[in-house]
Image 1 (cartoon, one colour):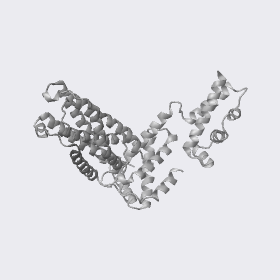
Image 2 (image 1 turned 30 degrees about the vertical axis):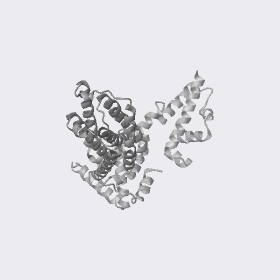
Image 3 (image 1 turned 135 degrees about the horizontal axis):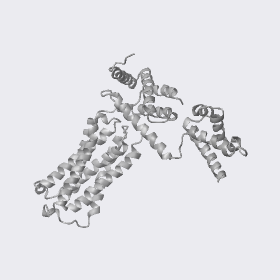
Length: 214
Length: 187
């Protein structure tokens, strides 16, 4: 088929697809769903009993705030990536990197400055892998939802879109775990909470490459 | 004629208007939009890809623009949206070329090399006809049409009911086979 014939054929198919709404609409819908899902997870896992004391600790509070920012920024970055031109807001898809870098730096600084808080140097028991699996389990359902949503669009950065999608839900899983698990060992958190997030987002990038093809 | 600096902006606005009308159901406007965008794309692609690939990539981009039309709401500039899709497909194409490996050389160049080899080293014992017997019937037909009768890949494809890319791939394989054969004989 030559280009003229192709144009002729395409111009006969103008109707059909409804235009996507704004990324803010999808972003807010996604955040609302993730919030409801997180609340459900708290009921399932039970919020840690010392949560009030923990929130009095600056490092814990900052970590939770950064995790919330990571969930929000990654979810929005994923949504914006479903538009070929990122809805002409290229900065939004760079924010998750900055937040993740901040979170990593924060953890590294704490590790270097140990013992920062006696509770944070307690070595973890043998349940490390269970935390990573728990993050994966919590992330599983929302990742289906978010990939389903992304497939509505036409991402020209499927690797990044997939990685942002999984980063958002894995950060949500980690947030749920940090608010429910009474373990503040830095080594445990770094090794079994944040390294898995990084690995999951790489897996998300690979999934994105396959699932977001169009 | 002196071109006004405002002209590209007006042109882009016109394209956006045609596209908006097109996605609202006006197929004549959509047709004009695709026509005009294909001219623009040829110019952009020509800077990054060999001439033989331009039409294939233009078609790929037009299909992608069509598939992704629901992601454009008409409230933001159109050209960054079109160019994002174009860049994506051009990179895709370059990646495919790269993956095919360094043995993927322009078919015309190989044909030229092949012709030289035949006359230089096999002038007394071999002929192109004999070499052509080494390849399957369909590939032989394609080589004959392209390099003896002088048809383009597109014309050959049309006659053999194949698409242009398939013709190029078949020609490339046939030439590679002949070249391997020549290499074996020279050793």
